[in-house]
Each structure stands twice: as structure tokens, then as C-alpha cells.
Image (cartoon, rainbow, N blue to C red; front, side, top):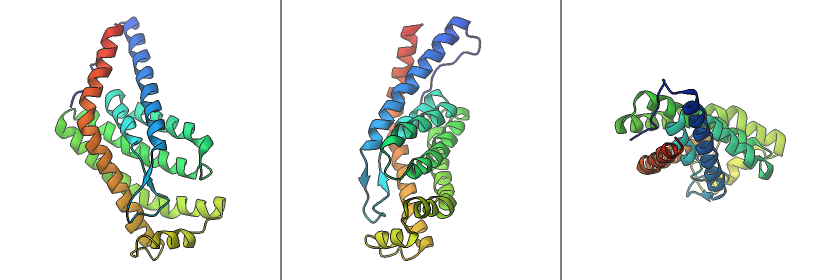
Length: 214
């Protein structure tokens, strides 16, 4: 996999153009991510309130191409833009930002040191594992209690809804391990696979756009 060409000895004018290019690229990736966030689907055997979308792909591309900080910024902007139409009083967006930032941030940090195809695969694998692990305490002690206190949607109601599509879910812990864990694993792997195949041409396009502005 390729990455953006950088030069620590850039002139002030080149640095300014580089910053403009990065901000423009981040804005485009944010817009794509917001659009993809609306194209969500339910997955078989998963709790119906867990909807899968491809919005993390542009964010991950931004983390690889522009750096992990840009990835986190794009993740933040994506969720802030989606906040006015939130169906969860911002709880879903908060959870999405935390887990998404962990995923793209870790992947970007590792890839920044291992800029090879193997490095990209390794970075996304570790990021998927970290995402899945962090989501366990986050959902158990933060997200589910917030749904109950803010929306009045009790954990028992969530369990009942989930049990209707997956008989293995009978308690709060089984909801975590048979609902949230496989969902986040699936999401991380699918996003990683798609990103792996489309990142190179997109990064080349970003590089080409940058070269044309120099």
C-alpha cells in the first residue's frame, strides 16, 4: 500500500499548500463518510438496533493517508454532522465516535510506522481486536445504562428485542458477547477488507491532486 509523499524540508509555501490539500481531502472524506452513515442495514442474528454501514471506510482511508489525528477528526465531524438527526439522543453517535476513533486511530498509528501491505493488514487486524475489546466495557457500563436512563429503554427490553433474533442472548453479558462482540468483529473485518483493496487508487488520487496544486 502506498501513502502520501511527505518532505520535512518543505518551504513555507509548500507547507501551506500541503495543509490546504490535507484539509480539503479530510473534508471530502468526511462528506463521503456522512453519506455512507445513512446507508445502514441490519445484520442477521444481530440485535436489530445494531446497524452496519460503511462509513468507517473513508475515515480509515483518511487515517492512513493523512495521519491518525486526521482520522479522529473526520470521525468526530462525521458524528457531529449526524447528531441533529440522531434517533438515540446522541448516545449512538458518542459510542460510534469512541469506538471509531479507537479503530482508525490505532490502525493509523501502526501503519504510520509500517507503511507496507503487510503493515496495513497488521494495523487493521490489531485495530479490529482493540475495537472489539474496548467496546465490551463501553457498552456494558456506559452505552446500555445511558439508553435506560436517557431514553427510558431498559436493558431488559434490549435483551428481549435481541433474543427475538438470536436465542443465545438471554442476559446482559450474553448480549455483549453474542451481540456486540460479533458485530464489532464483523464491522472491523469488512471495513479492513474493503479499505485494503481501494486505498491504493484513492491515495494515488490524493497524491495526484496534491501534485497538481504545487
